[in-house]
Image 1 (cartoon, rainbow, N blue to C red):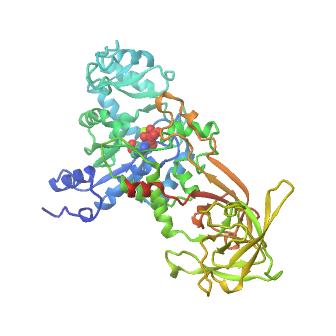
Image 2: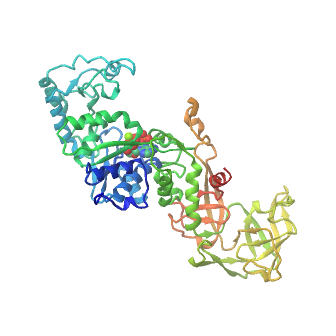
Image 3: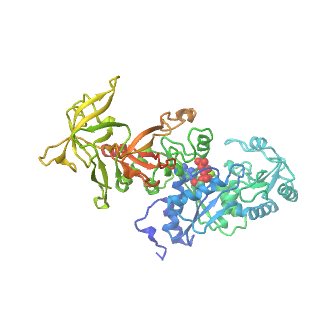
Amino acid sequence: MTETSSPADADGPRDFIRDIIRDDLASGRARGVVTRFPPEPNGYLHIGHAKSICLNFGVANEFGGRCNLRFDDTNPAKEEQEFIDAIMADVRWLGFDWGGNLFHASDYFEQLYQWAEHLIENGLAYVDELTADEIREHRGTLTEPGKASPWRDRPSGESLDQFRRMRAGEFADGAKVLRAKIDMAHGNMNMRDPVLYRIVRKPHPRTGDAWCIYPTYDYAHGQSDALEHVTHSLCTLEFEDHRPLYDWLIEHLPVPSRPRQYEFARLNLGYTVLSKRRLTQLVAEGHVAGWDDPRMPTLTGLRRRGIPPETIRDFVARLGVTKQDSVVEFSLFEHCVREYLNKAAERRMAVLRPLKVVIENWPEGEVDELDAIDNPEFPESGSHKVPFSREIYIEQDDFMEDPPKKFFRLGPGREVRLRYAYFITCTEVVKDADGTVVELRATYDPATRGGDAPDGRKVKGTLHWVSAAHAVKAEVRLYDHLFREEAPGAGGRDYLEDLNPTSLEVIEDAWLEPSLAGWPAGRTLQFERLGYFCADRDGTADMPVFNRTMTLRDTWAKVQQSG
Ligand code: ATP
Ligand code: MG
């Protein structure tokens, strides 16, 4: 073997795409690796796109090549600047950099137009005047060949004139199209004279109203690849049937390079939808608060939910790249997030459903400052102070008046540990007129400061708590799956019927330990015993808002161990 080895040969990921690239480099078919990530700016990126981004940028990095970010902006009817900006921000957030290699299919409109004339002049394309419906009817079926349009054999000079007049804006939207002249009986429907250009009078975010004809995806994509000297054009399996057309166009045009297309299975994920059409509908109809609603599988939604980008990259890497379509369990994604956050997230205490406890033998007005470890996974990472005083809040769930045997938390006459603080014993239960428990009275043992009894006495429960006088009030938003079915819309149902009506629960009077005041957004932490949380941009100095990123329990890991 010659000098084609690269870091990618060592410990990097292996899959059929990387094997192809390795072979291409070894055989000399490719001298370097150029890939591209080609989003259409008609929506926000979702976690499925992350798979494509990690693959395209990943192989470029591993093989010392480059990856272009190219906007496939050929359909001005649906594309917007907002989406272009968001896509760039999301790719960067995910950890990838296209350097100076930012392109737009619209950069190539003039070249693409010239090549279309080249096809017409060579008898390989014609202007058709059938309506869209008629074109569909003429196309035939999988078992029947299509029928030729009456315009199919018009002289190329006539098509050329018509095409120039299309460009000049002489015809109404949809009145005519340019079609490749390939084979109306071809076994692959995409080869039955596919449409290359259509008339659309819509201002384009970049070219304004310079154009009223726009190339189709199939026509623009491969030629853009060729113009950028893309070597490996990686796309999802639904484009497999388009590959013959991709190759046909490359073969019949004087393009400067010969890219090849390879297809891999798209990411499908349980309990959510990964289709821009559906995600657009969820936003437009108000089923969610916007593209960045933390329940959305969009990258911007996941970021707002507190999901670190590292965990998305790790998740995608574990899935690998294959040609097998499948639905990935959502619990695998959660597992990746928990595994990362368990190591990375600092711990703090917060009480979501407060129950006041008055410690009767604690002197009024006195405050103790206790040391709490920032992250028990890395004790050397430091600690912070938590104030303790006469009145504290614990979680309502952590008390039962008549507890069953297995309940190790607080009950009348029982002793528990308050994390980092003292042992307390419940001495009295205070109720309101309805019999609801509204307050507990307790005593503490001064000898247990820090959480251990010098006489070796054990307690079974350790509770989180906050000092009532010092705690910061907050709103906490608890998120669950957006859909209650793993496969929304399966069996012909409207997928909207499967929306989970309890996917968001808002708690308005949660209490946080004071070190959480001003906690930066984007630094996900653990509320001890409750889950992972992050500060939301809706918060104010007076009323912070926290999103639950994820609960603590890991069903996926358990299934793997027992299964
Ligand atoms: P959708 O059809 O779901 O709306 P899309 O394919 O139209 O998505 P594009 O902006 O065209 O969205 O996608 C950009 C790139 O991301 C394409 O190469 C596409 O194949 C890839 N991609 C889109 N969805 C997924 C997915 N779920 N898994 C992997 N790659 C994907
Ligand atoms: Mg697409």
